[in-house]
Image 1 (cartoon, rainbow, N blue to C red):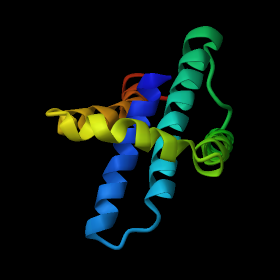
Image 2: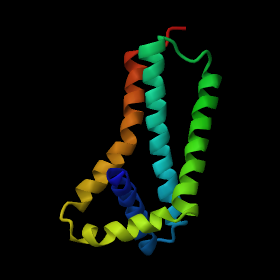
Image 3: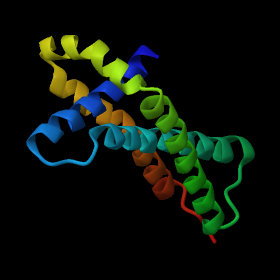
Length: 136
């Protein structure tokens, strides 16, 4: 869980620092929703791997897959809203890592890696669409 907390901290810290320089809407909500989109992407990637490798099938229609993806995103958003915003866990995470982050010489690399972890499932899903096209 420590790695997930640090990943969330990197995202939250970026939006927090950005809010000092620009008038940005609530950085807590932005970080939570970006983290939620990344987590939803990982869930969709796991579902895609399960359907492709175990079931050897796909969704029947694009509308069905859209509803499934939308429900995954909504559930992860509600779940992370409760965990990070309502229970205040994001403030605890920020307080825990703020001191060590300021001393870290590789903070930019860690932020890039955090964004990469959140974008990786979407890149893999896009490559699946290219490598394994749907033949209708």
